[in-house]
Length: 114
Length: 115
Image (cartoon, rainbow over all chains, first blue to last red; front, side):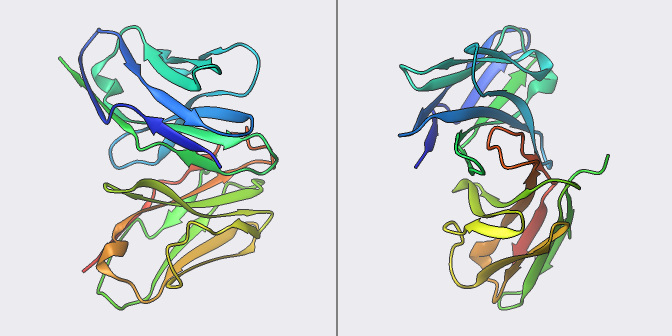
């Protein structure tokens, strides 16, 4: 079975500052990794995903994440945040077997202040 | 393009009543997921289907919950009888193909309040 731990439940940051949202996973098999974003009163949408290849993955809205297999981590970063990045961010993992399910972490609330 | 469509968007019901949530996945998608989101427990996978067949229902809380997918374009999640602790946002999501690396697309959720 797979599990995901998001190390910070809330991250306050000032506008234009860099941010890192931390994610660790556990799995006995190889996995795919995802970051989703949820704006208030909306469903989740994909920011980026790691399937294979380069460990640095770039996504939408200037976000990127780095897969670190030895540390079983997939931290999300952005060099300069905007007010509009205020949202809940979810890290998720799926085993690479066909038709696998997606398991989410508890979420990190990013609050960008002016 | 139409995304995942859920109905109702909001429902308030009395304890003991039956609740039926509906979902229309994106056309051509082979997998369908039902998630529940609460403040206390976060996002929980309740059940998922591949090609209309339930694959894993280990997240369904108890016998009061049931889900069906009679065809590729429709699924229901039913709670009978409902209880206040079922109050949550229920998300339906769909995914193209059987590859678990494919992106899952979420609906906007059904906000359920049981009083």
